[in-house]
Image (spheres, rainbow, N blue to C red):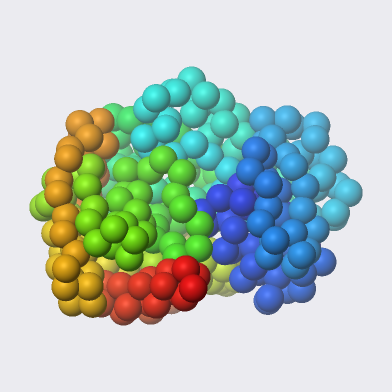
Amino acid sequence: MRKVLITGATGQIGSELTIALRKKYGGENVIAAGHKRAPDRELADSGPCCFLDVRDAKRLQAVVAEHRIDTIFHLASLLSAVAEERPQLAWDININGLLNVLEASRARGCAVFFPSSIGAFGPQAPPENTPQDTIQRPGTMYGITKVAGELLCDYYHLRFGVDARGVRYPGIISSKTLPGGGTTDYAVHIFHAALKDKHYDCFLRADTRLDMMYMPDAVKAAIRLMEADGARLVHRNGFNVTAMSFAPQDIAEEIRKHIPEFTIRYVIDPVRQAIADSWPRHMDDSAARREWGWQPDYDLPAMVVDMLDKLAGNAT
């Protein structure tokens, strides 16, 4: 990677991935592209930023050409809960935006990172140790766009030689940027509520166990996969990656070890609960470990300690 473009750079993953890549490759070599949300001071001060709607193919190709981009981390998308509210818009952004990125990459010889999701599975997939290769029939627009995106990336690699790679992220937990309408958002909001109010109303059932990952590991997975030797990759897109699997009651119990007075109440959102119930409890990520050395650094206790420390420090 010499010149990198990140779409969705002001989002939850993008804002932290951008900083990590700038530290690694130099601030001037990583272009942060956001759409509606303005970059924060750290993003704005550490390197070049631009506004970009990935549905605008001409503008996208102009940015790629102007900055001589050779690698695109394509993170712009509508997340699961929001996508169910606006499914037509989700298709337009998640699929037509990806197609524009792949077309620009085909024309300019760029590599592409595309994040898929645990949402790419559906209720027919095995819920425990969900295999790398298994049935994928999601019942949400978000999941449908992720499966289609995986296939589209594979097609552009096989048909046009585009070096497209990607992972299936579980729920992502960040101490820096709030999530934007996903089914696992509770696992971020619960920390803010615990520190501020000592109480949280959770929109999922207490026993809804799902795969999760702390942001430093999510950033690490993206960079490590793109730096991996392509000759070792049997798969290319949709690598299962995970770090921990827990339910709301588990994270609440872990938080209470540090904030004993913390309480939680379960006020179920039927839409997000239905989405969560259709997802795997735990993915088998042995293919990623075998093919490119995936290994997470954070488990639940380590993540809780770091989140509370960082959020408490930000509040002072």
